Image 1 (tube, rainbow, N blue to C red):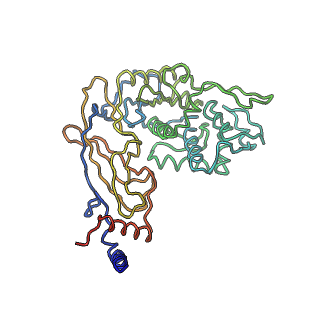
Image 2: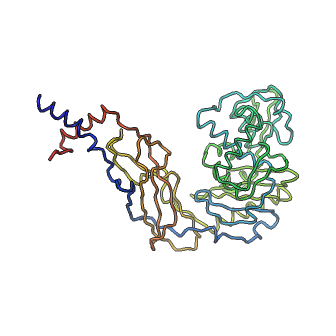
Image 3: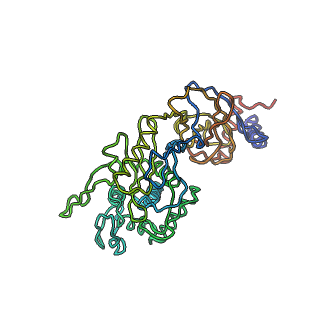
Length: 416
């Protein structure tokens, strides 16, 4: 009994001495670990090496071909020129809708009532009547497949109260993405002064939208119906014909106004390679589709991608004495991939892992370190943030005391 009391008193006094982070360098809170990759990989394609052969899209005002995983640019033409982008604007509206769903603020089954403002939009529409009700899911079908202006405004008002406030959310989102050549005046893409974007910005927006995989369940469907069990059954046909006729195409957004002419943000995936093709300012839909396919063909014919690490791959495990979990697993925040030309030789890579934040609590999705990919010459060629696989809390006093006593009993802590 005396021994137990003595141990209890000692543990309380010594708790601060036992708090440490294993595998964390206490002087700079950073550690490096190298590991050999057994996978064959090829060198990264830099933006400086991207093709500028305008014969791929001679009729477009501007365009770009981007790898969706790495963001590497394969082709560009006037990529930063500010132009009207018509209904491709709606991709930002879709991002916000999906974020609202994922955060639990709205649900797919929520009922949206069309206002007089929404029903009176005109242009591409699903012919909502004032007071008509549809679910969020049905509205998203209308936006994604029919490029419906009325459905977009109805969703804008449902989320933000007014279209004006929703457009403020859209402009805030593009700023968060670091885009410098985009500004919106409405949520539909109808022609309006000071409403513009660029091929590069549209590609980054498309890349961000694709992070929400649910979007492909809408954009990949060629035909569907709304009001199916009513007398006003409405046939939806996807304005993006590539999803039916081009191998691997499953999105993403068309656009057409007098100022923008014909535009398309297309995405297609073959094996692990997903490409984003943007064409702006085409004279008609036939040329738009043809030149978009030329971009995609160029990418698939000449490039390949290798996924080095996915967001499910545990790259390191650490221990923190104050943490509620004995082992903390670290994974990449995004997939790590190398884009290269098919003609290039394969290579091997090594990884440096740096832990930069071990302060509890740690939240899933928060940045706790980074993984650096290096080539055979030890040059850093790619970096990605690391995060934890689950939320990690800090032990309270009683939990910490119990852990300390257990460590004493099993011999993990010695007083000698």
